[in-house]
Length: 250
Image (cartoon, rainbow, N blue to C red; front, side):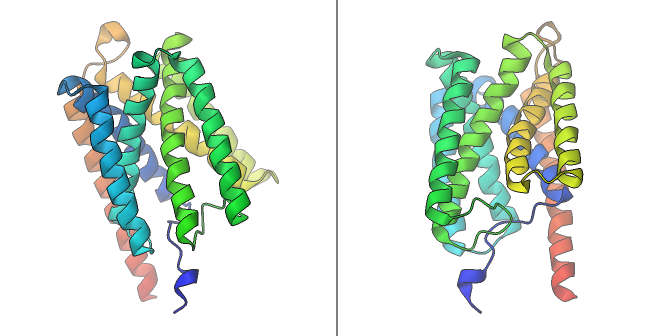
């Protein structure tokens, strides 16, 4: 087998987006659980999950092929680190969600540009090279951080609230899905819009569950919300894994 042709990442199917939204919501509730509920603070939470992300991403890149649980463990660690990074940029560095989002948009654009110049593609459906996967995970970490900042900007800075922010982003995601099926707009471009927007969609829903009623939430708490989305994610991962095994046997 020519290992250069092994796809290192999952195909972008419906189950991908189900797992991704569960993982990003878990990233929001998990980061808040560690940084605030467990009183670890943003700095310690960032260090722990950035280190975990680097370790898992390194292992994933070394293994080369797509492995369901390792891939999504890497992704979830980037989501938790991204949430903590976004809060650190806003609250500790005092950049605010708007300027923090602008900074992250610039960083993501530079990463995608360099990725394209080096690899001649930013296709997220098929990545056969080690260098391509490095850019892939770096872009995902930045995009997860950006998505959190955008969600907080909508819900807090614009005072839209968690529910209406989720509805607004949901409508935008439906528009992107329709554009994918009924227009000739680049699927890669639409993917990155959807990827960034599903992050605040999950984040605002996570905040709605965990924040107290005085802050626009229902007060479930970060621990129970995190456990719930962990279970949802694991069930979806099991379904994906069974589907992959079934396809291999055909």
